[in-house]
Length: 322
Ligand SMILES: [Zn+2]
Image (tube, rainbow, N blue to C red; front, side, top):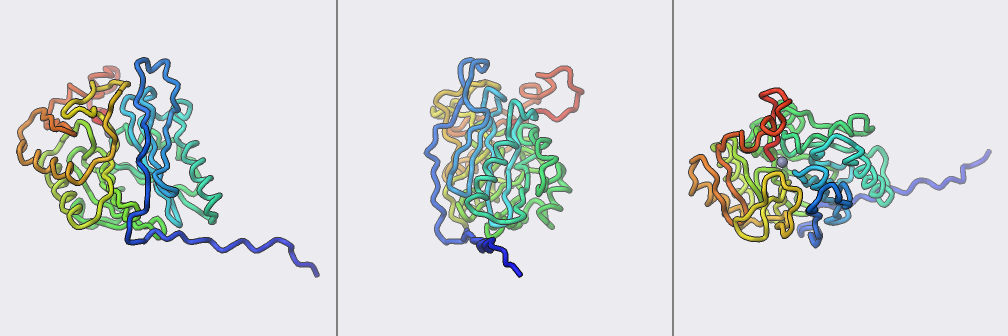
């Protein structure tokens, strides 16, 4: 009789994500912000910044797509969640799958566990946030949240959309999911108690806040402000930067060069400023610049519609609305 000389695999080290203090993290990063000539841009297709060991912020290169959306990868004990898949389908131009796989592989080499899963989710259903989905269709151990209101409600288990708040557990890292429609109908905001970061998709970021449904937008922002009054917040992170460091000054729509752009992180005070801006604008259509954001309320689609820029697409196709 022989015994295997293989050592028993070490027990899985469970990571504690539930401290009372926010996990330390860094936003000391110089974000790649395009170049005068996108053709001659040689920055990486995707910039990856480790906020901390379990929290990654990714940004699509502006030369690959002018929307240059931010995406987020959060690790828990049992699964990771990828928030958004960017503005470009092609793996050749935009190797998101490869980048995420490498990050997960590295994380698992430091924190080995079996059957680790990936959830691919969306802050909202505009094309600059889900075009990379197809790269994940054949990925093993992967669940993708469907692209409809019904799918989103069913996946997170909302019983009262959008006013309810529900938990989504990554394995000891309990995200709080809130419906926040107004820019788009199926938008969620996500609070991570581990880092105390509030992720706000495209409803709140330093840029042009396109409002499709004023009442829904105003209610969502009121709920987010109320949430920040009851929960500690380190940073608020949306999915784009379109404002410069100069108050009220944004970049040209569709530019691929943003020197002197603002950092993506926003503060609770700036979210309250948005609350005041909403009260001041009071639903009137128009474009209203404020220091760190600009409200685009009910502005005719022709200014920024996908059809206007792409006359070959069928009318009615959902466009890029940031
Ligand atoms: Zn967007």
